[in-house]
Image 1 (tube, rainbow, N blue to C red):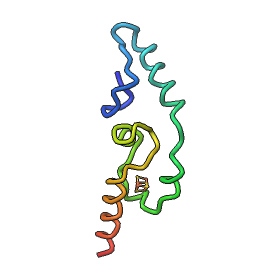
Image 2: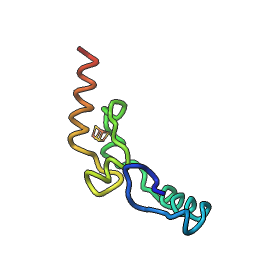
Image 3: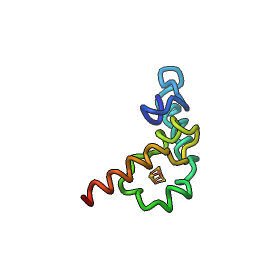
Amino acid sequence: MNPCLNLSKPAARPLDTGFRAAWEHLQHFVDDAPPLGSVCLACDMRGYCPRCPAWSAMETGTLTEPVPYLCSISRERYEGMLA
Ligand code: SF4
């Protein structure tokens, strides 16, 4: 089990540990996850942005940092809605 299809870690093995232990293992990870980073928190494009913790992890190695190409996509989405 993983917390998300796009996060390979942490991983739990419910067939070895039991479902409850596996779930709690992942729940601790989710409970301890950092809050949204300050750049994204202050971003005007946030409502148009698909970034999520897993996407940040895949692209930046953190759960919170902006993903530059998503910033571009978000800006394009916003401007496309104005057109
Ligand atoms: S990833 Fe970029 S566009 Fe998305 S919320 Fe963060 S700073 Fe804004």
